[in-house]
Image (cartoon, rainbow, N blue to C red; front, side):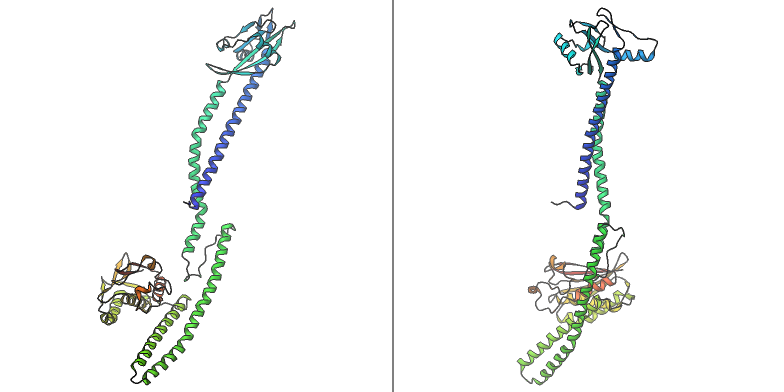
Length: 463
């Protein structure tokens, strides 16, 4: 399953932030550990070298001589002599061991003493009280005798600081990751908000509203380039559709005259046909087809003029209930001829601000469509009510109905349902397109609910 762009951006941003936070945490921990380790090593070197200046030897007996009244010397000596011991390199004998060093249990063999004498290097040991770093250095007395001096410094403070810092990072990383996820989601929503606005505006543009354009922000970014390119495409499409509408209107207008002439010639031939019933039936059928073609041309011409903006509506208060009752009364003979029960229902007075002529045409097209697709003995009901401050018009029939796929295309121009179920109906698929245009111009909405074999209900809501 492919995730939406917003989710993908948030996930990628979260992963990047998590990776950067992890790398930064590891790097910062390593840098801190190295700096603290370097500081300890530097301090150990200072203690070792400083202690060299205070040590005195008298017949292999080391003593530390310093001014006890000097607080700085006293503090230094106290720190330097906490962990230290002295070996004679000549005999390998331990000459002195501080009280702090004794519990460490570190005793060197003669070979180890010689090894550290040749290569005086520091080392770390693990003890019950934590790690201790010990330095090795060679010191000579006034007679040239050599001694191995070991000075130690506790690493417990450094290890404790690093441990607390590590624990802090382990707590902060999940929190930072959660905050990064929230921030990434917010940023993705914020970054894609202009795109959502454009998508909403684009969905409102169809073939009837090609004059609209997507809003621009004047920020000169990539999204602005897409908007400008889309608006330029809309302009070209609007121009092309306008030319096609003009062509359709011109063609429909030009066809009306020859069709009228052709109908007149057929009527004249029908009068002269005498008693030839077969010829009269053929001519009458041709006249019906010409009438059907003429109605189709009139509808196309009207729809083309409407969509091109040539038709202006005049809005006045209209009593929808009275208009509906009048139309039902006019169409009742047509319904009775097909034994269809046609009736009008209304609750109270419903008045809307509308163009009376076009509203009448809307109702007439819906009723004609309902009667056309309702079998003999069926029912057609036109109901006018109020719905939350709006006028609601329901045209319900018990006709053949439509499938969900057909209802999704029913308002498209020239769309017709399955011919196998609509045989005998002379519709051209233009009437409902005109109904949709009328509803849109009145800033209303129209919906259809239909089931195959059970009938359809067209619902119009007008402000």
